Amino acid sequence: MAGRWAKLENYRVIVRLAIPIILANASVPLLGLADTAAIGRTATARELGAIALGALVFSFVYWSFGFLRMGTTGFIAQAAGARDDQEARLALTRALLLGLGIGVVLVLFQSGICWAALRLLSASDEVSELVKRYFFIRIWGAPATLATFALLGALIGLGHTRKLLITQLFLNGVNVCLNLFFVFELKMGVEGIALGTLIAEWAAFGLALWLVLRSLHFNLFRFLRKSRADVLRKGPLLGMLKTNSDIMIRTLALLGGFAWFTNQGAKFGDATLAANHVLLQFVSLSAFFLDGFAYVVEMLTGRALGAKDRSRFIRDVKNATQLAGGTALLLALMVWTFGRPAISFLTRDAGVQEIAGQHLSYAAIYIAISFFAFQLDGVFIGAIRSREMRNASIASLLLFIGLEIVLTSWTHNNGLWLAFIAYVFIRGITLYLYLPRLMESFRKPSENTISSS
Picture 1 (cartoon, rainbow, N blue to C red):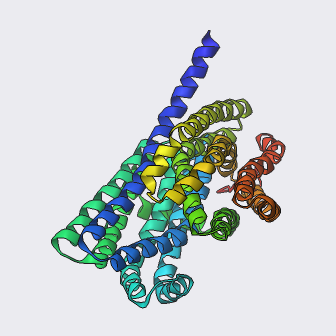
Picture 2: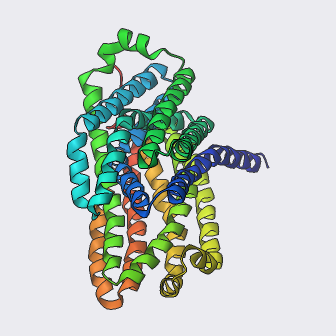
Picture 3: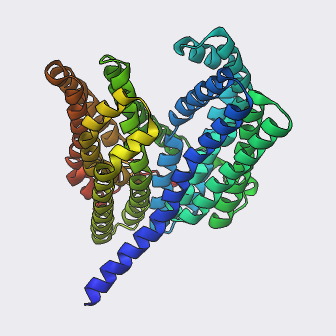
């Protein structure tokens, strides 16, 4: 009986940590919806298109540096597990400096980035000009946004997910209020949306920095003066850069997989492309929930590894994965049951509705099995085993492309979805094959763990 109550308590802790992350993730689309509504009610279709393309550019650029969040989570969680406050502070400071540094580089090269982005986008001259106005204002928030990635990673690593939710709600709340004010009151259009986002990004950075420094109980500037040599020590810095470069490659491989899926779907016609896009909205929505459990696993894995507690690692990962698996099955059932009415709500095109309905079961299956890859991603991020993540992502992408070429030649869009389902399954399996090597980390120091000594 005592064991059962202990397991229920562990479930409760995992859910308590995951819910703020799920809510924080779910708040992100509301910001885009508010921006769209503000511009859509006061401006032209060109300005609405410019906002969409401008936001796409920043999403791609910023997401490319998502390692600032993931890598920091692993380092902080392991330091917390080892009860090494000094190492946690060093890891945070390095990540902050890296995020700010990359942001400054993006600002310095803003003209080249904007030129390259517009070359890749198929936009009219009028829309391109509006995208430029948006881009050259919002780019000044790059240092704040990338540094905030590191701060959010620290909050997850420390297990302070409520503070993560506070930061995300603050960012989105300030952004929505400023955007509505600049657009409706000051009639600033595209420039108003960009300026509101810029101010919100810097404000959120300030709040997140305050929350993290309070959590770690230190003064950043005083710490930099006192521990500058440790912060800039070559070995730890090179290790962090190596880890982050592996995670960046892994992220680009994942983006490449979704881009390949979208591009190949376009070959079957506009209606099929639109239908696949609608179904991907269900996949994206499910990711808000599954990411919550994956982020918690990052923290739990890092802490268990830092404490060298093998039994704790097995218990926490097993329980979190059971919760994630149950959630994935529930989400898949909801998509299967309510998918057709949702499709009708998202599009009025009868042809798109028919194609999406025909492939609805594939989206449900994808969601049902995707939790396995999500959870193992969390395990390897928390363990800072970036090389394995990189290799697994590249291998699964190559196998996905090969399967897609073969299957679509036989069954067209059905084959594309089958290959896509195999893609997420292969991602999980390839990571699972690395688990025995990861378990050895509980007997000897991890090759990716950075020590301050």
